Amino acid sequence: MSVGDSNPAAVPSPVQDVQGDDRWMSQHTRFVLECKDKEPDVLFVGDSMVQLLHQYEVWQELFSPLHALSFGIGGDTTSHVLWRLQNGELENITPKVVVVWVGTNNHEHTVEQIAGGIQAIVHLINTCQPQAKVVVLGLLPRGERPNPLREKNAEVNRVLRASLPRLSSVQFLDVGSGFVQSDGTISTHDMFDFLHLTPAGYAAIAKPLHDLLLQLLEETPEESRPILA
Image 1 (cartoon, one colour):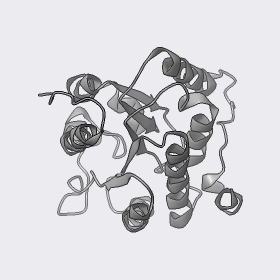
Image 2 (cartoon, one colour; image 1 turned 60 degrees about the vertical axis):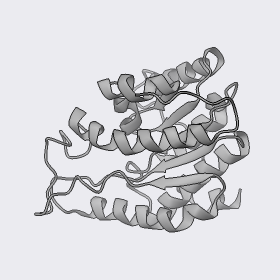
Image 3 (cartoon, helix red, strand yellow; image 1 turned 120 degrees about the vertical axis):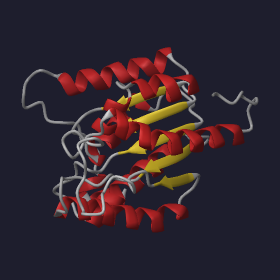
Image 4 (cartoon, helix red, strand yellow; image 1 turned 180 degrees about the vertical axis):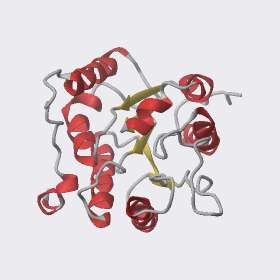
């Protein structure tokens, strides 16, 4: 696709196994096997933000009951997620909703390239899973104090908020508005390393996301499903 040729953030690529432990590919292989064994209604794909969400209690409380699968790998960029989705992580399943949360690790790319990489992921999901609705989560602020990476993430969100409505069956959800305090700092109460969320941080983003997922699942034409408390 031409966008991939001109945008490095939209070119699918696996992680280079510089450590020699095959860890990344092993995780990908496990995800592909899960596609053959399970029938998710909701699929989460992304980087460590998705990976850590699956490890906290809020996953079991809110998202596991929605028949959700979590395909998150720490450190992934848009290119890595694209490669994984093109190589088996969208096969043998028919999710009703796919949640995409990736982009904060695309340090070497411009705002426009990162947004384009996320748009390429949405396009791929629309092509491979046309029945699925897509939720793109906004990139979170990062760093204890204001910094260029935080501003870049905010700019990516602004581009996505304007551009994603033009794509099919996709919604943008900004879940990061409450993390920056009045003095411009982020608290370790919400992000233990000023990047990754604590249990309290995940609790803050979980409710609006859970509410949206319930809404989207109820809109699907299949059999009605009970509201989960």
